[in-house]
Image (cartoon, rainbow, N blue to C red; front, top):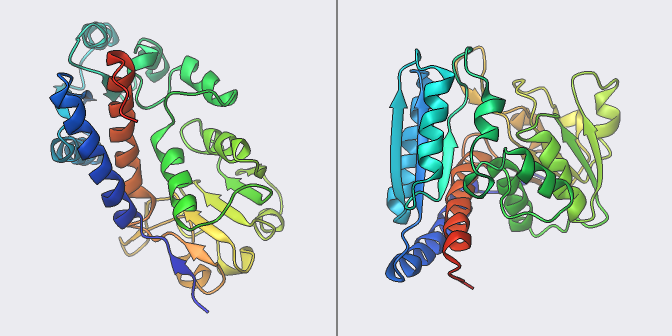
Length: 287
């Protein structure tokens, strides 16, 4: 029996429609949510991401400002721009696209974005709030993963949840969100011995390691919810995830495809965070 495919593209469209409606309501009340995206250098993938974010903002009615800087931009120059955006009243969210040139410290840049405009939820203040379960913003990809699990109609409470990957962007915050929903969480990573011993016990398996098709069907518990965060190119140049979809789909109960799973949800959660930032700063309650 094949797994039920969790369609991230369809769910993203559904959530974006609600964001569009709420943005229109806020704009009619005199506050148009605004997002500033900063791109330093000419990384091709980053250019695509920025373009997609801009298009998503425009579709939702969110003001989008793009700042494209040369790779030679100094850290001091970038910080100067961040400080200007911090003080810009019509900008509610600031996103600095990673990766940055090697001479610029991403941590330093992140720490200089006002926490209330940190729609990526990377600032230590927001990370701390996630740790204690009292947050305003969530990192976009982990937030999207939680929405996908919810869409599958699966309760996290009491389930064995395994997160493969321990990055600050996905793995660590993902584990905190699953824990907040009363999941029993195990974090695995590149140093984990006998990885399959852990993944085969997972009722909910989230994979975010950046290794093409490393999780095979025989490493998955029958009926499990499998969320594939990975996005890689295989030897043939085809876009694939961290999970071997061809073998996993015959074992899992629910599974996200690549592309069309987590990807569309990440930008959608960015829009949601921008709307939330505008709501908090203006004190307009959209509920």
